[in-house]
Length: 436
Image (cartoon, rainbow, N blue to C red):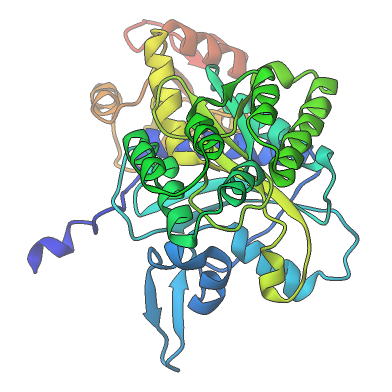
């Protein structure tokens, strides 16, 4: 149909100008922070064998994969997340590499699901994976790096919650529920549907103590005192081991001076089934969805034939862009989708070399400069600049002198970079900048 020639499929989008610059700024903040912590960037294929991706992600995520066939009849899929491809990479090529391994990525991923705020069917992620360590300090580093990287993007109002899936599994084991009952409670907690949770708890056969502990999960959120309350609700060893594991992680964060920025949430249930230990989520006050998610996944690489502990987190670039923009607006600051100033440099006949030299000097100083290709003269240059959203124009006359129009701060910038004054176009004097 004709509309398909001009429209994009549902759940994907174009990025233009200022929005592209904002996206790049967020991604570069992650690049800088991850690299400074000793993580090495990896790039994996955009599509892989569907069986490998499903092996790592389980049936829920497998249903959301975009699948297609190659000419040999193999079933391929676009990657729905990045942790599984990195796990496959380590199991295939890095079994004998010294551990722990520290990797990071910034990449687009694809999921066939309903688009929602901050995430379409194609969206961008930035994340880290630490492979080969079971130490609480490894989990603490992941939480600390989540804090540091979000701060590096410029976000100010955010927090990180940590939990442990072992506590939930311990409560389920203590309750003696069958698989159907476990999954029903898991779904209710995952969607934070507390009415459904209450109905499932009333329906399922379990002791009053187990029912009270599972019902309390949504309220086990806050400061370090949550761990004491959680330990008092159960006698199951798996649940108690989870509480002690979180205490060890918090102890490391206290040593780092970061524990005050981290909360406890033992009702945190993840939508991927490979998590085995600590889990985390990061939120901002300006959006209602997690900006970061992650945790420990010690069993994932074993699915590829290589048992290896691992932990990590991923941030959604699209969501962080939304949170940043809303935060800036709330403070009355400039929209993050504003492009940096652009310059337009034009020349009369015989002055192209001088105009090019001026443009190069501005570019070398980090300015964004367009060089006129339409033969604009002094009268039409300023109007053309305004129409194209250019903040400053420079016209170089045949004798090498230059005239400029623009705001005072850019006029001062021009004078600083060229070493000479920059009179406006209506001034009677023009500053000769280049000798013929």
